[in-house]
Length: 248
Image 1 (spheres, rainbow, N blue to C red):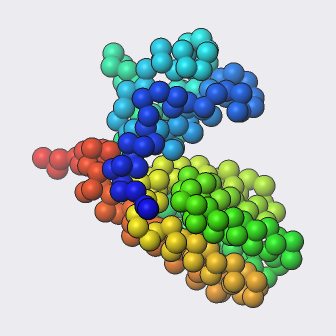
Image 2 (cartoon, one colour; image 1 turned 90 degrees about the vertical axis):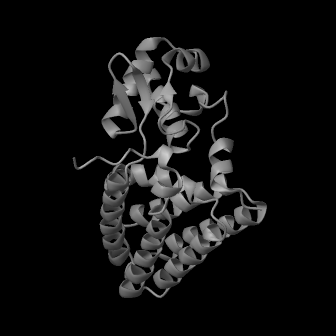
Image 3 (tube, rainbow, N blue to C red; image 1 turned 180 degrees about the vertical axis):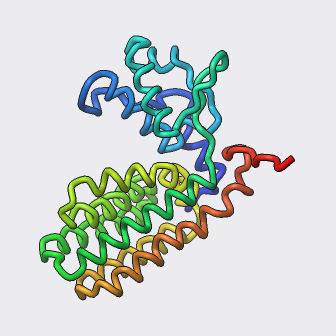
């Protein structure tokens, strides 16, 4: 059974073990620390507005303060944490303005990508997309929403990568980072996961027909459907969003 949104947030924010071991990542110590913290923030294991304690990070990951500080600097540059002098480092609260801007940028990128891909998509690329969707189906049957989220993300990453533009995925990820975090609140909404799967199937069908206009239409509908679920979140979870600025 699908969980309620509040239950989902609590489930994703355990008191301990929030940060994956650095062994799961590659790169320098600071880079692996950054990836572990970033993953915990995007997965909502670290709640928006929560104080990030360097001592906990260092103890959990078995590192000194230096790589932790470097990782936090990178997260601050992405807007995922707020460093407040004399107060500490806090997980950034959601901003609906940033979510809308991210959704606008991602839509522009993905619509251009799928329109360019549709007429030239290779049979092997279609096979990979079909396999991805089959696994999505199994994950929904098993109630594995975290797994579904991962496959959902891979579906979109494949569409971008199949264009042949190497930097496209990186640009899209940067534009989408705040939406990615907020959409974790949406997946537990009853019916949304199944609807997302249907939308992916429609996108695949358009690609199989090699119809750029239809592919663009289906992708636009898919991306905009997400925003209809994201828009009410500010009222439903005011504690997770930045307070509205007064005009006074």
